[in-house]
Image (cartoon, rainbow, N blue to C red):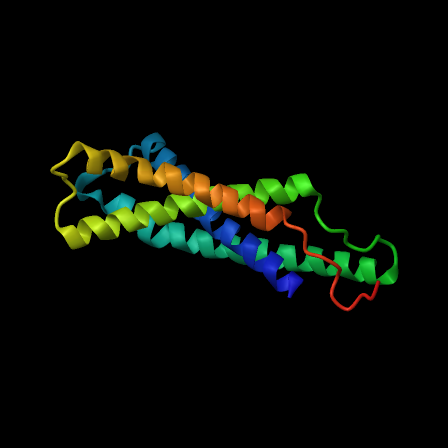
Length: 165
């Protein structure tokens, strides 16, 4: 499962990175070679045809490379050449948990406000108090999400499962 997870992570990174690189390089080449931008056909071809094609190729390459590298490392670990995998240090767990909580909390608040505005029919408020509450909601939920992420990452998990002490 670890091999699949790393391969999937790097495939997604390759997908996004390949698309962005293809579009950026394509736009620069359009300017260098003075490609006609009439009606936007060249840009649409770049974004909807060339970009996804390059993105798929880079996703395939990065995912396959990550799978091979991870599998080789696992084989070396099983053979005793590499020390067993140790749990991440508290600082790393705190950074990852806090960061994910921060982004997750902010995203949840933005989506919640979007749904609220759609159900209400208008993004305007009749009172300054409600406008202030809506403007601070993403920051407050981001802070709460960060705190929750830190708590989950740093809490004591107790003795390891299956180990009698």
